Length: 161
Image 1 (tube, rainbow, N blue to C red):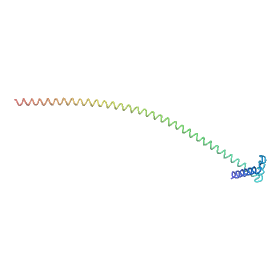
Image 2 (image 1 turned 30 degrees about the vertical axis):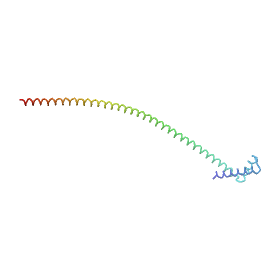
Image 3 (image 1 turned 90 degrees about the vertical axis):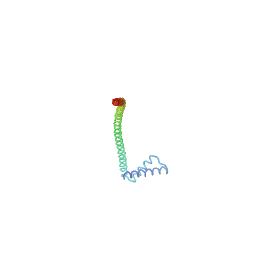
């Protein structure tokens, strides 16, 4: 309310000064005297008090605004600092995870090589076993043929006797 009265008073004074300058022009001393006499006539002791209070209120609002801005800046700075620290932590974690991935990739590659070596060994053993089985089958076949021939011979001798 006090601020509104003060603003209205200043506006009225401004309008008066502009009218005086348009009407005939006054120099700065005359304007100052006119403003002082106008203030004295309209609100003699109250005007100075209101002006002082308005000035004090204005300064308080300005002073309140500046610390608020400084507080907000401090808060933002703290937040940025926290975010930077969090970013450093995340970067360290990512770097660590990349190292883990490299180690796991090396392990997987090594395991793949081991599996290939085992597959090769298995194929060699399978080939060896198949070869052995074929050889044994051949031996069995040969023995069976030999037995058949021997039986034929034995029968032939039996029949001849």
